[in-house]
Length: 311
Ligand code: RP5
Image (cartoon, rainbow, N blue to C red; front, side, top):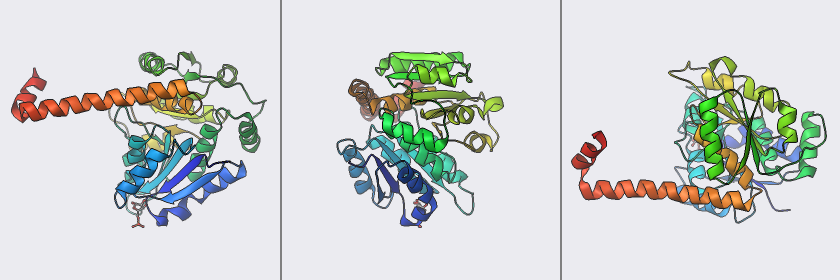
């Protein structure tokens, strides 16, 4: 069987810190390859390899880096495969620097980040994503994680969990545009219903008073859970660490419902060529929009362009 998960680190000094990810993948027999590919020191090699992954049969990437941790983000920009970031702990800032530079991706290019040093969670998430359409591996994962019940069905379906009307609508509209026509909103406790519906990914909304909710859902299922934190204003410094305390889950950053939808579609796309084509087209449209803006800026010059922006 070809490797399904690529694990890349920014330095070989990261390798001993993510050993638990290797152990998890080995325990459920999901084959993986490990590489040292730095976003900064070997950018061409990291980008080039990222572009090859889909064609080589990989389903998901884990990217671990510390400090100015751009490896997961740069990799996300170069592949349509879901990328899970592991922010490595740092001495001076305890890894909060790594976490923020991994998780706070711009709209359109999501990375799913686990918490600081949470290699084990990344291993489970990667295994679960690699197995969305593989009942045998799902059965192994469920047995190891102690999740009850037979392996549920799996189809191009994304479940949204929690009461968040506007972001849910936004995410569902985008999912439809990305070829995932089947979506539904569930009460957060309705995990069995989400499983019965055949979900390939769950988007779990979390607000300041419900930060543990995505992890509570994730504890009861092997469907990959995407934590989608929402906050109306400034958040305390422990907001994201608390959200990511338990797992397995990955978060797309604060107030990014569209990235939650895209990340969910990317997970579905690993088992659905139709959705994959839509995700690719969406990426291309995004790039064209930015290129058009740049061309306009070059032709108009900065003063006229800024004046146009202020109108
Ligand atoms: C990052 O800088 C790496 O991912 C690592 O976490 C950190 C230190 O790297 P080394 O100086 O040990 O190579 O790029």
